[in-house]
Length: 86
Image (cartoon, rainbow, N blue to C red; front, side, top):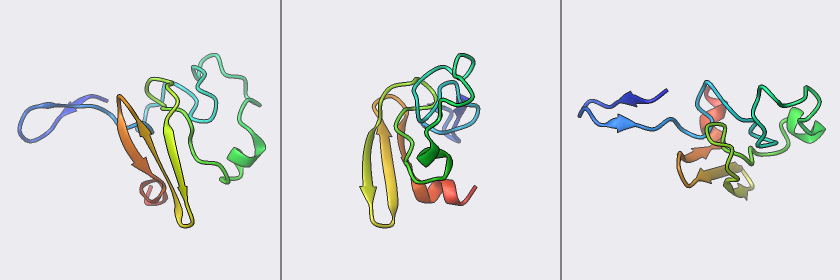
């Protein structure tokens, strides 16, 4: 959701912020995505998110030995360590 920060400016939701509009492994709208569209490796947690869940754009992904980070040109950066805390 778009909210406001303490200063009163609008904030943009992150690439993987809920509610998602697009599949993060396929880039397809969730309403149109088939149930079996997510690859098996992604279901097992072995693949990073490749698409922004807000706009469906392909993200720039950097895989590291301890995780990954992904950047959407419109919605910012997400790190795999942030997802582990959820």
